Every structure is written in structure tokens, then in C-alpha cells.
Length: 259
Image (cartoon, rainbow, N blue to C red):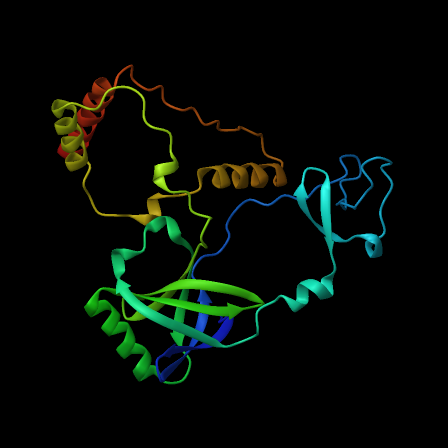
């Protein structure tokens, strides 16, 4: 069962809805430990002087911000502590916007919100957001850090997705202008047919981390003393032209649909 990682109160004007915050994602990446190859014991990383290679005692290590190449401003822990936001349990909902008003590039990390005490108000808010197709724009402080987020309905429940800050999202206008000619109407029609041929139900179970699966297979085989057979990833070679690629993909999609 999921365990709440934080508690707060959704503040909407004069009303407050107590909530619990739950992680909506969990890390499933492959993590390795560094070992001594001969003794097979874990090794530790230490702070060292890059010029002498000698260890630097922890009490002599300070944080620094590089203002220009090779020039640093040294900062003390108590100075940084004074800049931390004031602790609060309030999630301030400043406004509501259409759900599609926030571009996907701004979404960062999703959390589930569950009712803490007053379940009636909680579920009423979730239903209202779903009926209006609205998203709340909220701000809060959690673990000494400021957050902005989008309050969304998720079925009968609420979800709070943190948003990236100004300057973190690269606008599409910053991309280099595409080279070459524009697609003609025939290529657009073929692309449209390809999209239509590949239409289907979304199945999240089909999106596996294949690298992680291969690593775990290798670990299990080595741990059991079995012969090792490493499966390598072999990328497909693209067709020469967009038209050939679309034709081949369209034919494949049609064959799958017939089957």
C-alpha cells in the first residue's frame, strides 16, 4: 500500500481541504555499486585535491558558485539556510485554467493527492475539476523548496504535478529552422493514412525498459553460474526517403490490422 510522503491543505479562497501527498512514480532504473575488482568489495569516493590527489577533510569542503570560468563565490551553510522559504503546509491554488492550457513540456513530476480527513470536500473538488475540464495552478513549500504545480482530476481522485520554472523549458522557437523542402500533399496524405492504420488502444504494459530487463537477466544468470548470452540491440536501418519509409510502414501497419 502506498505511504503518504507529506501532508498539506489545499487552500481555495476561504476554504481548505486537508490532503496527503503520495508519489505517483517510482525509480526502476538500474543502479550499480563500484567494487574493488580483486577483492570484490565496495569502494568509496572521496573529495581530493585535483592537483595533489590528496584527500580533503570534510570540514574544509565548502560550496561555491562559479560566476565566471575559474572564479567562485564561496557560500556558507548558514547563509544558504537564511534564504530558504518559510515552512508551510498550505498549497495555495491561485487560479483555474482550462486543462489543456499548460503545455506538456512544463510538467515535471506527478504526485497523487488523497483525502486526509474531510473526504466529502475532497471528492467534490475532484468531480468539479473533471466536469469543468479545469486545472488549478498552485504553489507550495515542501522540504525547504518552493514548488509550482498543476492540480488535476484523475478519475475520482486528485493529482498534483510539479511544473518547471521559467527558464527551464526551451521554446520551440529556439530550434534551428528545418532544412530542405516542405512535405507535399501526397506525403501528408500517406502520413495521415499511416496514423490511421496504427490507431489502437493504449497499453502501458507494452512499454518496458528493455535495457533493465537485459541487465537483470545477465545478473541472474551470472549469480546462478549459468552460461552468459548477451542480447544486443540492433537498430533498424532507415529507408532512403520519407516516401519509402511511409510506404513500408503503411504496408506493415495494414498487414498487422488484417492479421
